[in-house]
Amino acid sequence: MSTTTQKHRDFVGEPMGEKSLTALSGIREILGEKLKQQGFDKAYMVLGQFLLLKKDCEMFAEWLKDASGANSRQAGVCTRCLKEWSDAFL
Image (cartoon, rainbow, N blue to C red):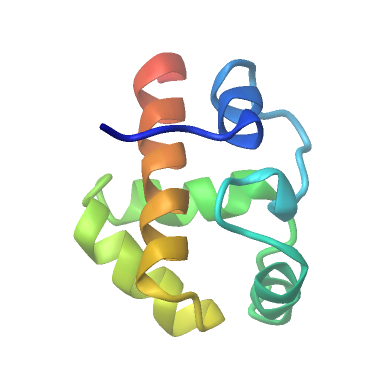
C-alpha cells in the first residue's frame, strides 16, 4: 500500500501555475538548487521535461537522477507526482 504526503496531495490537487520546484514531491532544497543550476527553476519546467520524455516514468526518473543527483526513492516520488498531476489536468 502506498501512501502520499500532504505535499504530494497539495501538488496534484490543483493547477500548477508558478509553483516552485520544491512544491514537487521528492524535491527539497538541495535537489531544487541542482535543478536550478541546470536551468529548471519552476515546477512547470520539470513537467515539460516529463512531457518531452512522453510521460515515460522510467526515462524521466533516470533523467532526474542524472540532472539533480536524486536517489531512486526521490526520483520515483517526483515521477509519481508528475504522472498523477498530468493524468488529472492534461
